[in-house]
Image 1: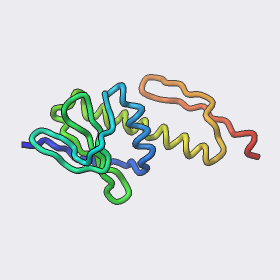
Image 2: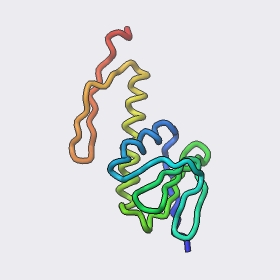
Image 3: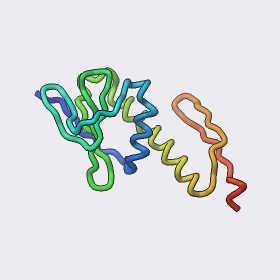
Image 4: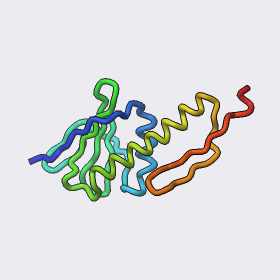
Length: 129
């Protein structure tokens, strides 16, 4: 019996999603796979982006309308689903914020981690005006 869970996300931009996954690769043992099959317990699902984990099971992301849906068999994952999804959303938000601010001519001066929060210090690009 399969234990796949589908999670609707608010993640829209593929490059930010891929960057967030890369940021978490060491922490969660993630790596991109060259397949469309997400392996779970006694079965597979298809996805647009497939990420391998430290376990024998994968995490997949499929675009559904404007956002990505995450699919995985979290039953056998070596980490809690909530922790992974929270960390993924945080890293996605980080990359999105950096891009949005760059479009408004702000540059990243620094970042400070306080617990689970990341505080970004930005400054306006003096050469933009």
